[in-house]
Length: 367
Image (cartoon, rainbow, N blue to C red; front, side):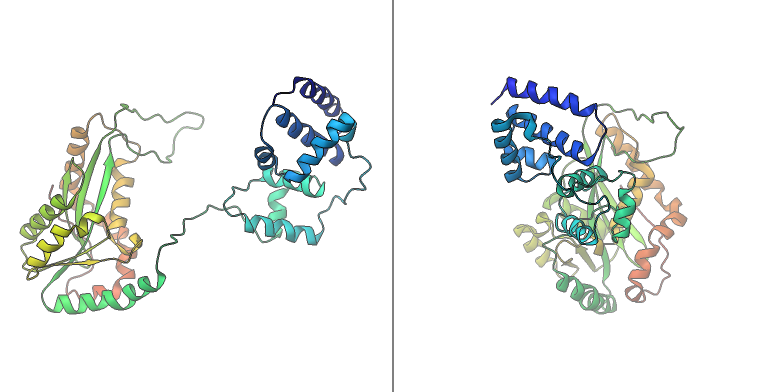
């Protein structure tokens, strides 16, 4: 429904109001007019109420009054009004409303509009952060909460099962590696960096998308890392090939891999093959949705921050060569890696005591 006559009438009245001194009454009237214009342009009542933070019943009442009495019904000067200062009771209502609507992004202008529409009170947008701070609130980034994460299983893993694995397997001569895969994109990832004020920092992008994957295994305690690059997607077959390469490279008789719950790690034929290699190979799986329990994740983050952020490559081949060079020289970053893995070494300090060697990352990598 597009009603040109009503829209023009509302716009004329809007121009008239904007020439007057801004008071709570005038501001409320302007918001009403904008909502009515949106309605007569064909927008749904539901969308308008969400956009303007107004109740659908109120909007329907505004429309009905306007169609009966015209623009004179918009201005509510007869309202007794509320004091400029927000009463304590309404402050608590504001706080509760923000806390209950966590899925919405709250910024000062949203709260500004809410206070005008709900209470008829105008605060400076610059003052609102101070008001919210007084209510015990702060402006901070949201974080994801993995709803499927089982905290009881996570607690059992870190406090009981993992120490038992280390105690039993190391005494029996097994080497324990944390295993994971990570991908690197040819179009790179952008991040913050220092530069000249007022000048853009532009990174050349070739407009092509490709990915190189790195399959790796990390031994906590010795800090030894082994990795293989592949230009193809990681699947059960390539995972098995990696395990065979790892055994040959490490020159050890017994390997236990601690992995995440990726589907290809549990492929039926792969599970049967691993069972047939039980004399020298075992797999243990981290609790579901627990990447923070895998120390190798910190290494991936460090590699991307040091070597691939703010860089792009023309082809997958170029990216593959670049990563191969990095891997071949990674042992020269021993000092940096020591500080990178320091948090994990402290976190798993009890587990690391099973090793007779110092907990200092000395990385060996093969492409």
